[in-house]
Length: 93
Image (tube, rainbow, N blue to C red; front, side):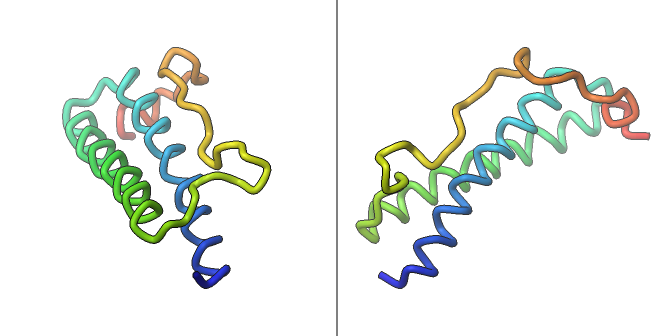
Protein backbone atom coordinates (compact mmCIF):
# COMPACT_ATOMS: atom_id res chain seq x y z
CA UNK A 1 0.00 0.00 0.00
CA UNK A 2 1.13 3.53 -0.74
CA UNK A 3 2.92 4.87 2.38
CA UNK A 4 1.45 8.35 1.91
CA UNK A 5 -2.08 6.94 1.80
CA UNK A 6 -1.37 4.84 4.87
CA UNK A 7 -0.10 7.92 6.72
CA UNK A 8 -3.15 9.94 5.68
CA UNK A 9 -5.48 7.20 6.94
CA UNK A 10 -3.60 7.02 10.24
CA UNK A 11 -3.85 10.79 10.64
CA UNK A 12 -7.59 10.58 10.01
CA UNK A 13 -7.85 7.86 12.65
CA UNK A 14 -6.00 10.10 15.10
CA UNK A 15 -8.27 13.08 14.35
CA UNK A 16 -11.78 11.63 14.25
CA UNK A 17 -11.85 10.25 17.85
CA UNK A 18 -10.82 13.71 19.01
CA UNK A 19 -13.93 15.03 17.29
CA UNK A 20 -16.03 12.47 19.15
CA UNK A 21 -14.55 13.73 22.41
CA UNK A 22 -15.28 17.36 21.49
CA UNK A 23 -18.94 16.65 20.70
CA UNK A 24 -19.37 14.53 23.84
CA UNK A 25 -18.00 17.40 25.90
CA UNK A 26 -20.16 19.96 24.13
CA UNK A 27 -23.29 17.86 24.66
CA UNK A 28 -22.48 17.61 28.34
CA UNK A 29 -22.84 21.35 28.79
CA UNK A 30 -24.99 22.70 25.95
CA UNK A 31 -27.94 24.89 26.93
CA UNK A 32 -29.38 25.63 23.48
CA UNK A 33 -31.80 22.99 22.12
CA UNK A 34 -30.97 23.72 18.49
CA UNK A 35 -27.24 23.37 19.11
CA UNK A 36 -27.83 20.18 21.07
CA UNK A 37 -29.68 18.59 18.15
CA UNK A 38 -27.02 19.73 15.68
CA UNK A 39 -24.14 18.48 17.84
CA UNK A 40 -25.87 15.13 18.38
CA UNK A 41 -25.99 14.73 14.60
CA UNK A 42 -22.32 15.69 14.30
CA UNK A 43 -21.40 13.23 17.05
CA UNK A 44 -23.20 10.41 15.24
CA UNK A 45 -21.48 11.31 11.98
CA UNK A 46 -18.06 11.45 13.61
CA UNK A 47 -18.58 8.12 15.38
CA UNK A 48 -19.58 6.67 12.01
CA UNK A 49 -16.36 8.06 10.48
CA UNK A 50 -14.31 6.26 13.14
CA UNK A 51 -16.10 2.98 12.37
CA UNK A 52 -15.58 3.44 8.63
CA UNK A 53 -11.89 4.06 9.15
CA UNK A 54 -11.51 0.89 11.23
CA UNK A 55 -13.35 -1.07 8.53
CA UNK A 56 -11.16 0.47 5.84
CA UNK A 57 -7.97 -0.37 7.72
CA UNK A 58 -9.14 -3.96 8.10
CA UNK A 59 -10.20 -4.28 4.45
CA UNK A 60 -6.89 -2.89 3.22
CA UNK A 61 -4.88 -5.01 5.65
CA UNK A 62 -3.31 -1.93 7.20
CA UNK A 63 -2.75 -2.11 10.96
CA UNK A 64 -4.29 0.86 12.74
CA UNK A 65 -1.38 1.00 15.16
CA UNK A 66 1.90 2.87 15.22
CA UNK A 67 5.08 0.91 14.55
CA UNK A 68 5.88 0.72 18.27
CA UNK A 69 2.64 -1.19 18.85
CA UNK A 70 0.75 1.61 20.55
CA UNK A 71 -2.64 2.51 19.19
CA UNK A 72 -2.74 5.63 17.03
CA UNK A 73 -6.03 6.87 18.45
CA UNK A 74 -6.16 8.96 21.59
CA UNK A 75 -7.81 7.38 24.61
CA UNK A 76 -11.50 8.04 25.00
CA UNK A 77 -12.31 10.63 27.64
CA UNK A 78 -15.62 11.28 29.27
CA UNK A 79 -17.23 14.71 29.24
CA UNK A 80 -16.47 15.22 32.93
CA UNK A 81 -12.74 14.90 32.19
CA UNK A 82 -12.90 17.78 29.72
CA UNK A 83 -12.29 21.44 30.55
CA UNK A 84 -15.45 23.55 30.78
CA UNK A 85 -16.74 25.02 27.56
CA UNK A 86 -17.23 28.80 27.38
CA UNK A 87 -20.86 29.86 27.84
CA UNK A 88 -20.80 31.71 24.51
CA UNK A 89 -20.23 28.38 22.76
CA UNK A 90 -22.91 26.58 24.78
CA UNK A 91 -25.46 29.29 24.11
CA UNK A 92 -24.58 29.64 20.44
CA UNK A 93 -23.76 33.33 20.73
